[in-house]
Image (cartoon, rainbow, N blue to C red; front, side):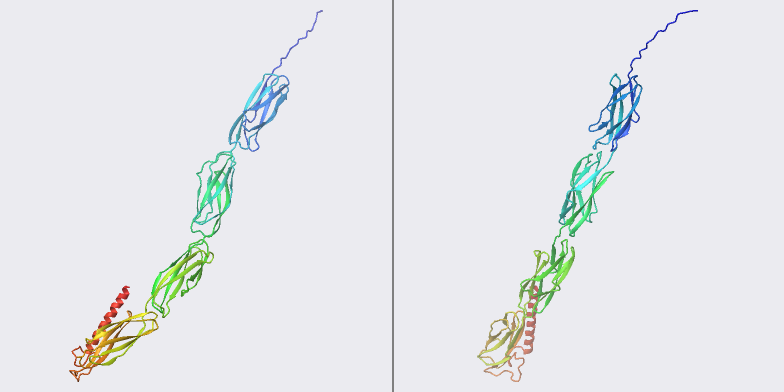
Length: 482
């Protein structure tokens, strides 16, 4: 059997196909300080070798993406690469989305995947003070200027506080609290109030700023400057003293400053007085007492005497207080009187007797004479001024009537200086023209003449004593009212 055979070639044309598949195994990543890295797979679904162009889109401002710009793959080949994202330092906390696309250069294939990066919250706060050492007077305020800087990537509320303040101190903010935005700075004033009194010295405390997740502090010092002041008082400012007497005064000194001080006491114008001590050292806030004895010398003249006590700070001589004490030196009368006790005068004649006054006191004295009892005769009385340490004579004259009977008659006088008084009795023997009515009756006390119609001498003496006592009582009462 025979036949024919033949072979024909058949040509099949495989057309070019294009395609790709783009995927990320972990499309959500955390973007930490070193950024985020996304593993990406690209598969060439085409049946020929092709180059693909890669690009990232939707990046937030300031972000950077690192990835291959092109990737060449054979038919049905898969390639892997890393897409690295780098957020800026000032990136705020939150979620950020972007896209990654791949496009074939030869075909019309294109695909995009969505990626998401999360920036986690991070907190950081710094605190600084422009001047950490300030000086202040007691009872004043001192302000510290603070500089707050937020390195956090989210807005925070900052609480300010002052820790370690001494007892009695206080503080307040110069402005109201408000949230501190992320990555910003702010000036804040904290005012510290220093009480009065407050001891001088250097005080240390801490200024603190804190958030819910972070805190910062700044140690500062405040120097309270020395302040010197004091109060000086007398327990009384005047005294009445007689010569030879003394009085004790109490001087109170209170240190109202804020540091220890020493006070020196002195007298002005040569005043005579004695301190229990003439200086004293007192810590701040303390009260000290110093005694002062003021004496009046025996024989000192009466009148008002001023004693000025000066109290001065030894560390600040310009700080001085003056205290005035008024001493009224009482008048003391020291008189001695001598007089003639009897004389003999003819009826119708003129008689007299002397009173010698010795002033042994320090003041000038005025002596006055007042008749207490007289026989009805005319008396000539005078007053006299006796300087201190002097002697004066006072003459008392009297005229006896011509018809006066014979006998012994008494003249009674009250001599007074205002502070002292004396009863003076001078007996006058009258040589009259007629004998006394009762020649046998003896005279007594020199105060009545025998045969006269006058009161008996005992009654007259009693009246004189009563009158003298009454005058002394009146003088004492008037002196007490003065």
